[in-house]
Amino acid sequence: MRLREGVMVNCPMCDAVIDVDEEELDEGDSLICEDCGANLSVSSVSPLELTRETEDEDDEDEDIDEDDDFEDDDEDDAEEEEDEEEDEWK
Image (cartoon, rainbow, N blue to C red; front, side, top):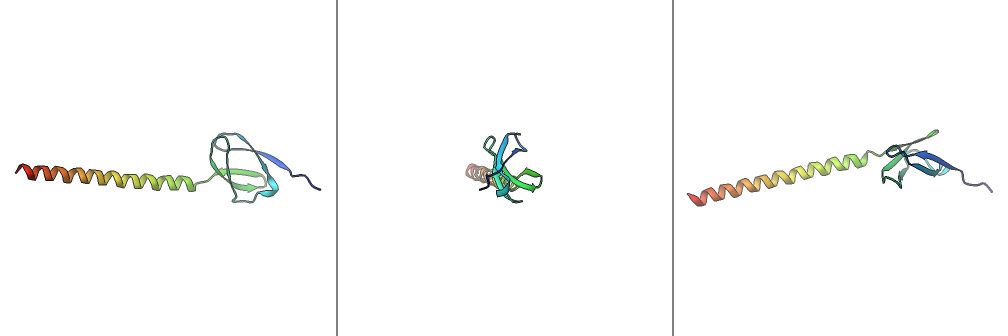
């Protein structure tokens, strides 16, 4: 019977030690750092290296763009209300 071999690797975001089973990991696998909550990806198995997943950053950028659209809508609504108020005064 072979014992599971645990390997220690550091989180690239917070430098916390993460204990993983190297034999269970493949390149591209995802992990979450229990200390900082960062979504990590196995970028290399020999030597074992982790990197922060970039999908979350892309999703955040899309969310920001969507928020900008809402702000523009609010500005358009405010301008329409001002125009209506001016028409009432005439």
